[in-house]
Length: 242
Ligand code: ZN
Image (cartoon, rainbow, N blue to C red; front, side, top):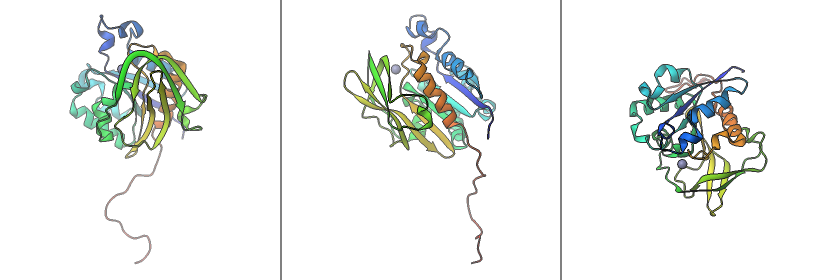
């Protein structure tokens, strides 16, 4: 099956609009614009963006119905995301929409809802080096990468990371200060595929890094819905005479 993958890139977009925040210099048009511009350059992908301060956070029923994969970045305003929108996104994931949760989206309402755990972790922001090791060679999300890649400056996220064991652990990160972290985690919930990807603190140019962007693009293709027969539940007639 070959059809265009429709991606909605969602961003809280608060740091970037604050004139006193360093994120504004790194992403003057917002992180969502950097990510969406890259994805739109790939064949077979069309993008739109949505942000927290739009009506219904830009995630109306119509937008979600026309979204194959949703990417999510949030940090300071997780609590402002309306529960009715979280319910709606969760329902779409269970119905087959892919979801890619980036960096501090580990604490988003939608990720915690889908994981069922606190999703807490260790953190430290001093701009240390991160080395992301590929754990699952041959996985579609690591296509085009080497054994590892590095980011010269990132926020440290470290274990323990209070998540359910991933269905597939795609990356483990090492940080210069010594911690390690499960930085690329695949899950399935209902018919939906979910990928958590660690890099992307708002003060570093991570969403211009070619390896990071490649992973996000690969993850979009991996998370896109797959055609499958309608799932039939409930009382069932036997296929053979009983
Ligand atoms: Zn951060």
